[in-house]
Amino acid sequence: MWLRTGILALTLAACASPPAITPASTPTAIVAPAEDPLAAASRKAVQAYVDRNEFSGTVLVAKNGKPVFREGFGFANRELSVPMTPESVLRLGSITKQFTAAAILQLAEQGKLSIDDPVSKYYAAAPAAWSKITVKHLLNHRSGIPSYTGLPGFFEKQSTLARTPAEIVELTQAMPLEFEPGTQFAYNNTGFVLLGYIIEKVSGQTYADYLQQHIFTPLGLKHTGYDDTKTLLPGRAAGYGFANGAWNNSDYISMTLPHAAGSLYSNVDDLLTWQDALFAGKVVSPASFAAMTADYGNSYGFGIGSGDFQGHKSIRHSGGIPGFSTYMSRFPDDGMTFIVLSNLETGASNRISNELARLWLGLPTPPPPPPLVAVEVKPEVLDRYLGVYELTPGFNITITRNGGTLSAQATGQDAFALTATAETEFQFQPAGIRIVFPAGEGPAPSFTLHQGGPREAKRIKSN
Image 1 (cartoon, helix red, strand yellow):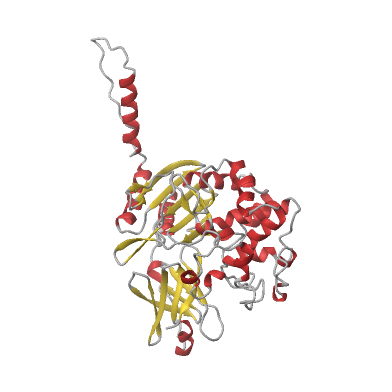
Image 2: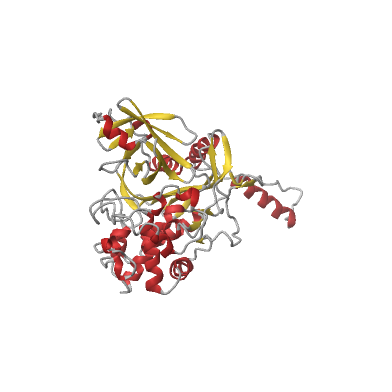
């Protein structure tokens, strides 16, 4: 598409100001430059997901900060048949968390807070049970505070209601901690809303205004901001779901609710600028960036993940919010960045990013992993896990039992058998799925899905 557009532009320019041609002159043919084979292969790979209704959105691959593949796929608005373009603006979901973490570290560098401070120093309503929880525990999901998005029926009953950050935190602050602070990892949206509250308390600005003044404007991010749904946003892509063979509009959610955990929007170009600036030390100091990208357990730092990808270091994070699924990965030692934004809430953003990473890094498709070593789990333990769990609004995973085996079935998809590899851990190897339930007694309140990054699914119904 870009090559044909370029040729057309040159032809029109020639018609507007034709050069003098002598009778002996021979017109010169305009020949488009050959496309990079890797770019062509990338387009083919992504289009395969589009053809299976597994993706709609924008993709950018950059080498040393320069885009080498940049394209839109599908529709930004299906009802109006508006095509997706690389400039389209999409909601980011939890990719927001790295912006929040950077803002906290900026305030720490200014001496306005310490990540080792107790949360109660800034949140006066903190219950006594939170006395050991620090800002750092919020940053790396080790606070033990229940996540408000896991409340039973939250999205069905409360997701359309506007709330302040304090009102969001109040939803779970009276509940018991899920574990002793610092002892476990549990992906937590309440913790990041609380970080947003702290940013506002310390800076004297709203979360949106702080990011605009201290991050977006200085970096020239003109297509990034806090999505309040009322503002007319040029290039805004609508969000969708796909289930049972049909596309549908995503459920409405008040964007006050994700707040500092997931309310930002952006496009692939701004996100590349953001990543380049963050890694170059233009957002936080090198020491703060090192702390941000360290592994504090479960391959997670402060609002961003890190780890090994087939022998290559990667810094990454996924995002999910009604109508959108996103994934961004950076390979610092290879100079490569992969950004995939989808306006399909079940979009295969992480799988596309990983496939493109293998393509551009020259990595083989991994051979099938060795067979799992299955363990036997008592039926009474398996029964703890049975139920319906919500991964994102309108997208559930149902866990059932057939004898001594658990099965999982996602909304609009076929069921698949899970192999128990530990009493609390189950895997579906063909899709690289690992499901981990919390230890304890009684019905499990949630599980963590590991597939391209950890994501929490909360129980909403018992079988």
